[in-house]
Length: 267
Image 1 (cartoon, rainbow, N blue to C red):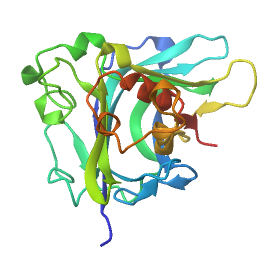
Image 2: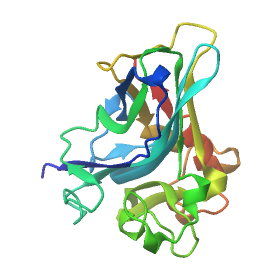
Image 3: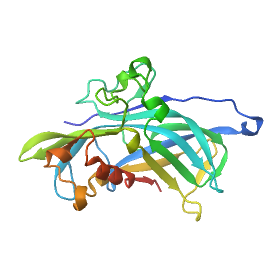
Image 4: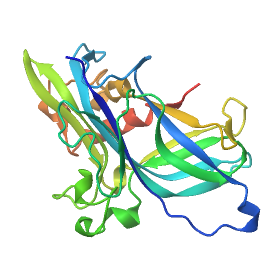
């Protein structure tokens, strides 16, 4: 049966007063391609790790904050706001495709070039972009029952047992001894905030043109989540329960490092 792909982006942004020197502000979208190696990710499709373990991805959700466009002198233009980007397999998620309070829901036909953050910035040439996968600390520990999307209990990203939000949530299935088992990684807490740096101050290899027409696209290669295993292992062993279902714990450190190396700018 053909899988239905649903991408959901929730966005909230604070807009502050602009000086007259910033009247040339234009819109610039930060987009994302989800990949598995050189191929676009298809939700529900079976892939293999480098160790030969079969797996699929049914859900991916993550927060983006502290977005900055990097200038040639190393300074940056900071963009306030927080977004929650979600790709869900409609066949396995009853909330997929529904309009939720405070968020825009749309049916994405592809995991490619989906907007994950809308930037307002002075027009010009920049040397790249940086951002965080996470919720700002001042928001991460507020009472989730008192805030609206993209935060709050309705987001599906709040840890009731560990105050704070899940910053990066990925879930799917794998085969272990001929049986289908769930696999998931829920990464959060202030210690595991991912700092994604895609800029270059010394060469012209990276250019970001902000002109109200172009956009910037980053790529997330989900295959690299399994790039290395804990304690020097050459690959991630999904047959081990402790590496198959993680809500934290000692193995998250290696998953964190793998994820840091999974981002790049689309060429």
